[in-house]
Length: 116
Image (cartoon, rainbow, N blue to C red; front, side, top):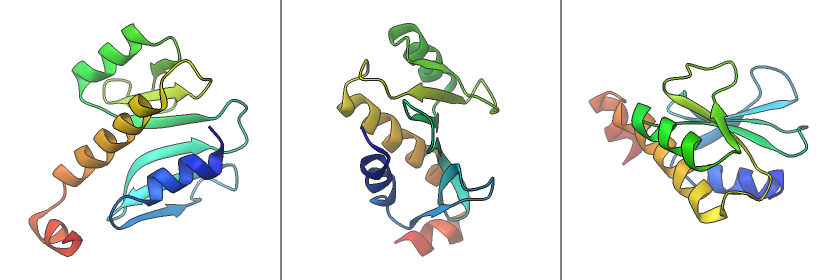
């Protein structure tokens, strides 16, 4: 998967935006100013950090060698996925959806209303 494909998936989420708060090499995808994905755009292969429940974090790591504890993140809640073809694209897209939904679930009531 190329960066532009990954970017399109992340930006397809309602009210998602892309920023570069850590420099030109790291794209951060946010909803309501909360990060749900982080991508090192110059990595080959690409790597993406995604949030998951603690149990799902461990399960993904057990199933896929391309999933490791989140690089520079809280290892209990974040995974880094190396996009090297091992993981089916549908699973990666599900992980992105889950990360987005976990962030949205923690928004305030007012923020959730603004998303509608």
